[in-house]
Image (cartoon, rainbow, N blue to C red; front, side, top):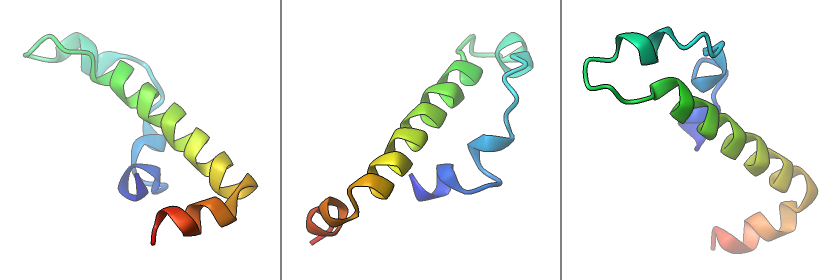
Length: 59
């Protein structure tokens, strides 16, 4: 999640969808990136609101 959440990671995607249109394997990378953005945002909110819970999970 740290790699994805990096400012140069998934946040540069503007969801134009061109990657999905030209994907040779006919998958939806744009959709997957948007799902990771949501997961990263939720993770960031959880860390902000419950920092003590994260410390216990990482032990």
